[in-house]
Length: 183
Image 1: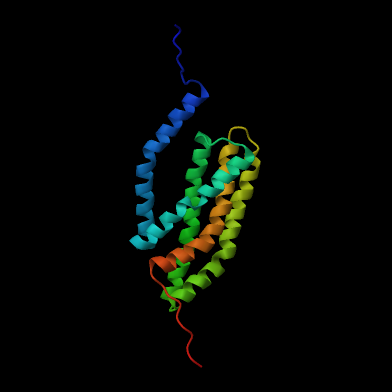
Image 2: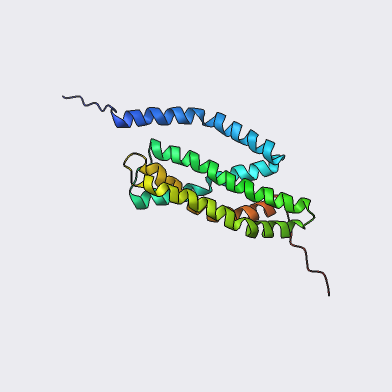
């Protein structure tokens, strides 16, 4: 009787080692990121809202990698980590604008709606610039999965951030639309 054995070696083994080292640092990265968000936004609730927008791009990452036929390996994982920061940056911009409007005396509902409209162009333009910057990398054999992950994730996350984050803000802080004043 012959015994068979399978050994993982080569590129797969190295990718596994790289992924393991990244996964080991994720709790520290999440803690530091959340702490910085709390310091910047001066609120646990607002920091949590921004933090929760990070995963909005996962559907775009999966879709882009499937459509392009690229693997979700170590390099694509690096792209997902970078993507989380880009998504959270857009969320900070939007929440900061809402808070500035509220501080200026704008009713909360109006501040949410007007901030999303006012910040639409800057958020879309910065996301478009990042996506277009990844186009040359997307053709690379090595960096391609990272570029594709960032491109797909950022496109989906930008749309979802502009639509879902204002709704999440209104739900989180229980903001209700005020009835118009009688004429």
